[in-house]
Image 1 (cartoon, rainbow, N blue to C red):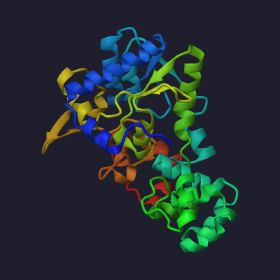
Image 2 (image 1 turned 60 degrees about the vertical axis):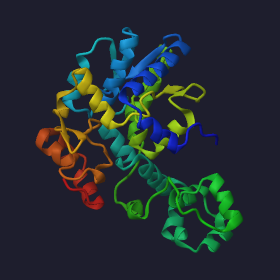
Image 3 (image 1 turned 180 degrees about the horizontal axis):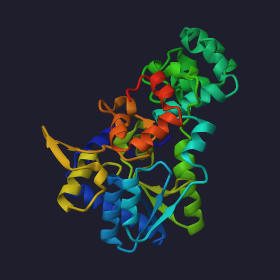
Image 4 (image 1 turned 45 degrees about the horizontal axis):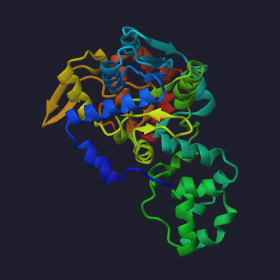
Length: 344
């Protein structure tokens, strides 16, 4: 598959001055806006990334609208903050968080890992292959029996793509640096006594936004950063900031920004941001919020294992005890955290 940018390109762009990033981002916004004749909406989560995006867009097009999805598990401060903006449509999903968790499973580790665990547990033949330990067999055995096992299993457990699988079948050498698969340290979650899935994002955010955009005839601009995940980095390298030719056109003009850029922009422009973040403090040249570091869905466990302590759950226990108690008393988060090894 053709890739527009290399990882080196991303590193170079991330090293640009903030002034240059602002200029390039606003140029991408203008290209997107003009291409779709102004039928554009900013996806506004109330978080600082989308806030910076909305500010940059409205400095060019003051009338540009935005859309906020109240997923039912937002921080109350975020909801109040969003309601203070003009020309922001607030929509809700068909399912609430509790419904999604009960039907599909918990969001743990990362979107990729949760997705692959769900596939192994639910796709025909994959769980049986896992229980037989076929992914642990010697490379020669895997090569000889490759076609007898669902490809999804090799994808999830070994990170094989169709391209790398073809190379493996020719050479007998498994790739050593696969990017998307279930790492060994998390493979035990396949046997977890609870469901695991990445579909909460789809049902609570993507699906309602997709319907909203279809109903309004608009396309959206999203404030995601490539540094946030391998998947977002890959999508940006494949499409660039403006995915005009994608099946679902989407603009991500902040992709080459970093979280440090976001905080510097807030410091320089002094635009108000949600109080839940606290102040911006600097330590050893690194900027950091004194409050919450992230403001996504309160029940999201993606990346929680990397938070350090206090992690987001421990902070939630102090700042929003009612939400914390709901997660642990009603949604069985204690079992999930104990199984994964998350402090709470």
